[in-house]
Image (cartoon, rainbow, N blue to C red; front, side):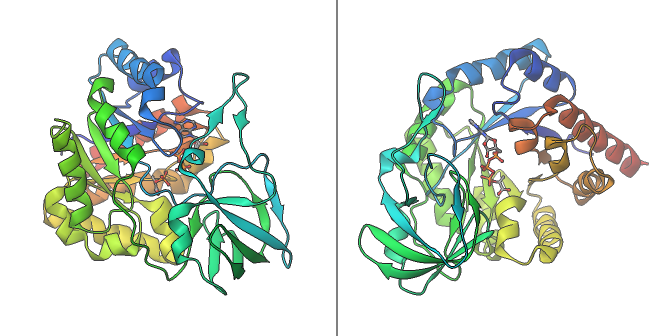
Length: 351
Ligand SMILES: Nc1ncnc2c1ncn2[C@@H]1O[C@H](COP(=O)(O)OP(=O)(O)O)[C@@H](O)[C@H]1O
Ligand SMILES: C=C(OP(=O)(O)O)C(=O)O
């Protein structure tokens, strides 16, 4: 059986030399850096820490940047906003420079937000009266009542507490978004100087998206970086076959993918993608919520270890955790459970 790569996502909870070194010793073989929350040029300390922690543990690490892609998240809010059913709220078109958190010298995030919700400009052409808008993976639902060039007034259909940088979706609308943004291009340009070994492209919709990424890698003499195609919506699932030749690895990104269908259909879609990849001999990765309960608890659920076993059984070349190591309370234990469960599964399957 082939080796299974074990990836953690770096974030505030594990970005310390001794924690990362221990994670590598416990079986982590690679790290993902999520560009939705930062820019590579601001991550020198982290990327150097990853490389030196891996070296201390005797590992040649994989280091992946997960591109932001066209941002389908709201901007930064000064504080979480309580949205009450039946009341109104405005969506405000935000400027490109608002897309990144501005960290003040005291470590707090700066924001120009007062009462409106900042929304990426690329979404605005697709907004229309009576349209449904979903925020935070569908937890909050709005309906547009008035629209102008810079703002949209909405009625809150399903309320909730809205926090910064949560997802925004327009159900039923296929948006024509560019594959790569200026921020993605900057990060790709800087990738090799940070020791990056692979690039994850979000929301891949067709072969052209991957060709655009490959061309950009070529432009900056980084064609040796591996390309990971994230399947995050039904467009990606439907066009998987055409993507296969252009990707080094297919990523079953269950976080967003799970938002694009009733959740009970997700396991079958995962299985379908895995089978197609296996048939084409294309390595694939399974990611998201593999050990979600461990963000808070030191021990996973039985269901979570079974999920990891299943990914190995399906033939995953890589498994990855996200928030569990980025912001969770037990990043080392997460890698220990992930790595040991993968090992135990392989031993069983090799019998
Ligand atoms: N590079 C980073 N800098 C700061 N915080 C991060 C970073 N990467 C991840 N995080 C934090 O960890 C959380 C979980 O990570 P991840 O699952 O990759 O993000 P998301 O679900 O927002 O795409 C994020 O919501 C964010 O709060
Ligand atoms: C890994 C994923 O991407 P992100 O963390 O950007 O939501 C996912 O959707 O499963």
